[in-house]
Amino acid sequence: MSRELERIRQLETRPWLPRTFGYLRLMGPGYLQSAMTLGGGTAFASIFAGAAFGYQLLWVAPVAMLLGLIVLSAVAWQTLSTGQEPFAAMKKHAGPFFAYGWAISGILSSIIWQFAQYALASAMLTMLARNLGWEAETWVMGLVALGWCVLVAMLYGRARRLVRSYELLLTLMVWFIVACFAWVVIRTGIPHPEDLLKGIIPFNVPGESKGVAGLSLVVAGLAAAVGANMVFVYPYTLRRRQWGREHRRLARLDLGWGMFVPYTIAASLMLIAAASIFHYQDPELFTGKKISPVQAAEILATPERLGDTVGLWVFGLGIVAMALSSITMQMLCSGFALSVMCNKPSEGWTYRLGMMLPAIGVLGAVFWNEVRLWMAVPTTIICGFLLPLVYVAFMIMQTRTNYLGADRPRGALGTWWMIGMGVSTLVLIVFLGWQAMTTLPGWLESIFPPATEAPVTS
Image (cartoon, rainbow, N blue to C red; front, side, top):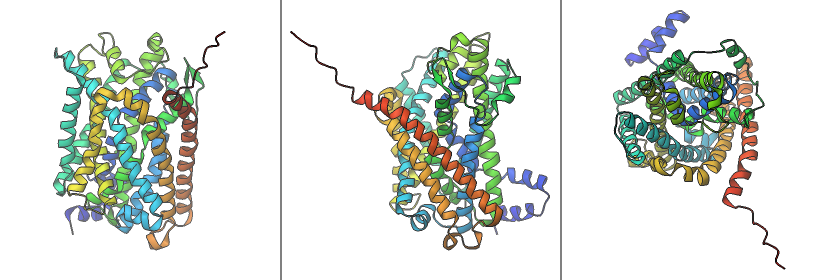
C-alpha cells in the first residue's frame, strides 16, 4: 500500500474538519483545471463585464463553474470507480461519435484558443519589457512564452515526482494570480460595496450599457469557465496521478477547493477591479468598445491608482501567469487526445507530437486579428456545441450498469445528480445557440460581403 493511500484511509476515520484539512495537502488535478480555465478568455470576459455593468455580473463566474463542476464530478466518479481508460470507455458505452467528437474538440479548441493566449502573453510581456526600457517585438516575446510553456509541459512526465512537481508549479501560479488581483482590488477599492450583494443574484441579466448587451457577456463568461479541452484532460490527469476508488472523496474536494474556489475568486476580483475604475470611478474611460487586459493595465497602472511601476508589474504578471498556465494545460490536452485516438501510450512520440500541435498558436503573437476573423468564431461555436454532446455522453455513461456496476448512482443522489447534469447541458445549449445566431451572420458577412448593385447608367 502506498503512503498516500495509507494516509487517505487514516483521514477517512477522522471528523469532517481535520479530514478536509488533511485532504488539502493531497490535492492537485483540480488546480490544473483552474490553471487551464484562468486564461485570456476569463480575463477579457471579467474585465469587460466589470467595465460595462459594474458588479451586476458577479454571479456569472461561480454559476458557470458550478455547472461545469457538476459534470466534472461525474467524470471523476466514473474514472475512479472503473479504472477504465476514459476515451475507450466512452467509445464503448456511449458510442464512437461521442468519443471522437470529445477528443477532436479537445484538440481543436486547444489549438485555436492558444492563438489568443500567445497574443495576450506576448503583448503583456512586451509592455513589461518596455517598462524596463527594453523595446522588444511581440513575436520575440511570443517565442519566450513558447519556450517557457514547452519546458513546463515537459515536466508532466511519466515519473510521479514530475507529475507532482508540475501540479505544484501550476498550483503556485493559480494562487499567484489570485494574490495579484487581490492586491489590485485592495488598491482600487470598492466604491459601492452595497452593489456586490445585488451582483451575486443568479441569472440577473442586465440589458444594455453603451451598446454592450448584457446577455453577450453572460455567454462569454459561460464559455470562458469550462471548455471541451478541460473536460477531456481532466480524467487523464486523475489517471496520471494514479488515483483510484479510494480517492473519490478527495477528487470531489479537489474540484471544489482546487478549481471552483480559486477560479471564482480570481474572476470576481478581476471584475471588481475593472468595475471600480471603469464603471464607478472613471466611467468616461469606458466607451463601449472592448477593453483588452493590456489597455486595462496601462490605465490602472498610474500613480493615483495602482502605481506606475509596481501596479503595472503586479497586474501584468498576473495576466501573464493566466495565459502561460492555460497554454501548458492545453498542450497536455492535445497530447492526450492524439495519443488515445491513435491508440498509443500517453508518454511516447505520438503524445509529444500532439502536445506540440497547439504550438502553432505562437503565431497569434503577430497574426491574432487575422486568425480570429477566419478561424476563431466557427471553431469556438463548433467546439462549444460539442461540449453539450460530451455532457450527454457522460450522462449516458452515468446510467450504464454494465459500465459502473454497483457504483452507478441510485436513489435521490443519483436523480439529483442527473438533473444537475441535465440543467448544465440545457444552459449550455441555450446560451450557445444564442451565440451562434448572433455571431455567425456577422462572420459570414465579413467573409462573403454582400454584392453591391451596379450603378445605373443612362
